[in-house]
Length: 61
Length: 187
Image (cartoon, rainbow over the protein chains, first blue to last red):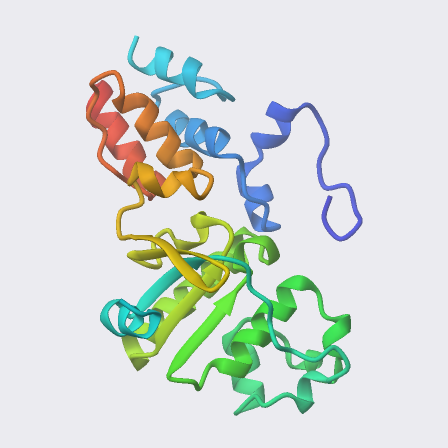
């Protein structure tokens, strides 16, 4: 929500995909989400990981 | 070493402790001791329309910015509650302003916050205080002993987790540097 208006809705992952819109209204993304999104930009992962164990296992498999 | 010696040596120091601003609730912004009011409000990211607002009617974020505005001409600026009061964008702007005040105007800065993340890319010296007493000080965010007193930030927790299996990610507090380091490590 931003200024009492619903800006976006959906499941957790769907909402977090809108990184730029969330940052524009000043929302800090959880660390694991931000890390996953940046790793996605580098083509190192293809989805958002919410826990470090799975991400580390995938990256250094 | 005392706080005043540490701030003289480091320029910007971070203290993990509680902070209470000294603003009086019934004062209007225009009545506070803020020099060059219009310019200073702009500098801290506030609109001049806020001048006729009472302190008690300000949001948490506005209070932090007004608190900073009242101190911006001091040689030593003591400011707190940044992490809990400011959103992501405001926090980065205020941190950049504090760095500029230190670099360009040689202001000494003491940042007091309960959240250690506030100090990333801002200060090299971290002090833990309880009941006005220094109980721990370090200039290393990766110092395990520091996290006996405060919650470990996620980025540090992540790097420590990866490195415990013999990998060698560098001790970054900047997520963009961490990404480059991961890229080098896995490709």
